[in-house]
Length: 124
Image (cartoon, rainbow, N blue to C red; front, side):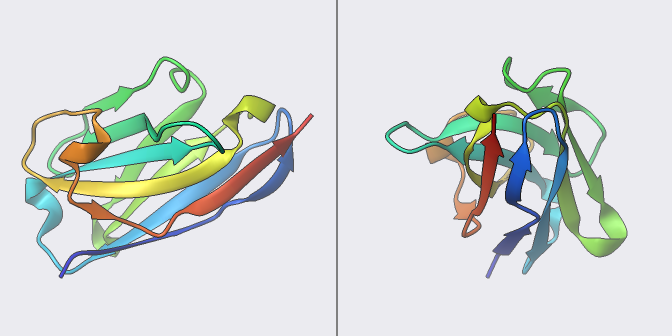
């Protein structure tokens, strides 16, 4: 059973940085695509960043490009989202997600596995 556990959220001020972690277990993740999503109150869940576990290629939403960085630690089975220059509009619950297969996809319903989410709040 795949399990994803996020951590690292919190309350920060605009311009600050946060690093989110996603500890993954229950599968051989080299065959998976990992994604970070976020959902703000009253809005749909949206893709933020993604990467294949098997290589270094990454993919970002326009809102994250240049400010956020997704990475992984194979030894720890953990995926990270480094968020810099945070803005109030980045406030949301952030979710880690996994899907079997290497195809890049930004659609939430293509991911079978989800963490419980971690709240990020950016004050102005």
